[in-house]
Length: 276
Image (spheres, rainbow, N blue to C red):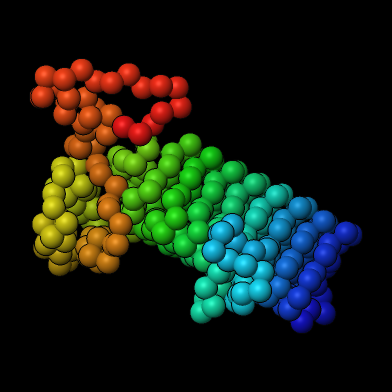
């Protein structure tokens, strides 16, 4: 089903059930493999590929898929790829007002919220979730099943396989560094709530508290601060580990200390060996 005012440029290929809303523009050489639904006023630039099978060895072409659903007013720049869901219940989802820059990727069964920015070559693995107003920097990588909280910010070139709490900044691999104050201010958050988020980060995420203590302290601090309470809910719902703050030593340093305490020499790492 195509709206009357869709603009489909040269060499575009639409296969299977495809629904395009009012004002959708496919610039050129765009490939849509249905089921695909794209909301009004979304623009897809050359070599965007949407709806092809997910990169999952368990999925075969004979299996049913709900495909991909993209919201309104999105911008998909050159070479963006969005793969179809492998589970029959829910499609891979991109929300409204999402900006996916060149070569960014959403894997199968992933979900991107509203007003999210993926900078060039940012990649989201299958089943990953990015909540509203988050920014994923250039060259970032998000592991499968990992969640990125609302208004979180990942600095370029970082990677995570642990959940990133709302309003936090990822400044290094598997590590949060502080609160995304700029994003919070731009989002209209009151100053006293930002101050309370800073306090919550210092008391809960800078150290290495057990999960139950994290939830308890965040709930206490969030009684008069909805953003902190949102952090508490995020942590309580997490199925993966939570990215640690700067108070926890890096993994390689922890391994070195482990060997030092036992009077052993640290084994030399071979080129390409990151097992430690």
